[in-house]
Length: 143
Image (cartoon, rainbow, N blue to C red):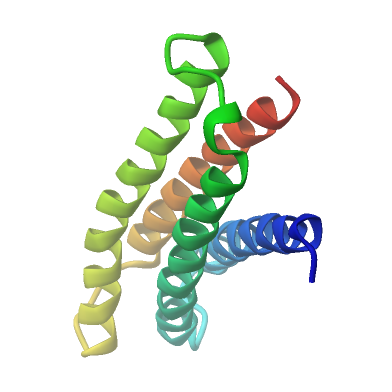
């Protein structure tokens, strides 16, 4: 496999992992908005498993993308570089703010009580954060 094919595969995996995170968060938020459908906690548990797996893929492929572009990336002092730093900062915040969400779901899976409204806010917030990061990524790709 040549360098271009590998770089394309890495970018494809990066975007697919982001889509998994965003789509799953929207699904759980939508299910929670419908009330407390049977199986909501199980769907949330499965999402958490996929979220952390996809996040690992995003981090690994992000590092791969950095390696592929290397020194050709603009400096942080440029508009593009500043936006890139904002994206990385947003990803770190997403990771930090996702841990409490995962802990809430783990407690729910263990039998704790929580309202569907709580899950709607947690997953709606996740979806909003990921959508914001995706918007930054689109700006970076076309900026």
